[in-house]
Length: 116
Image 1 (tube, rainbow, N blue to C red):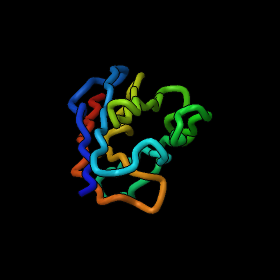
Image 2: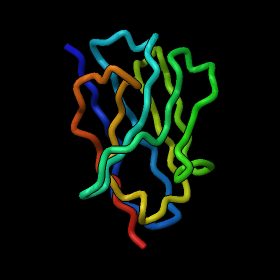
Image 3: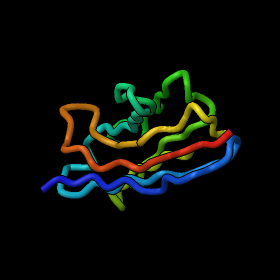
C-alpha cells in the first residue's frame, strides 16, 4: 500500500527557514518524478517544485519560490525534501508531496505558518 508521510512544518517568523521531509513507502520511488505542492486556505493545490526520478536532472520551481526553496531526494531513504529559506507570510499553507502523475494517494500534509 502506497503511503506518503510529510513532516517538518511549523510556525516560523518571516525570514526564517524550514526543511520538510516526505517519506514514500510502497511505491517504485526510484523511478518516479516527485513534486512538492501546497494549498493555502481557500485556494487550489499548486505544484511548487519538481525533481526527476534519478535526481540527476534540473529541478524546477514555481516563480513564487524560485531562489528560496530547494527540492532534493535521497533515494536510499525513499525521501524527498524541501528546504525553504527566507520564508514569507504568503508561504503559509499545507504542504504535500506526490508523484508528478498519476497521483499517489495524498498524505495529510504538513502545515507551514509564517508570521510577519
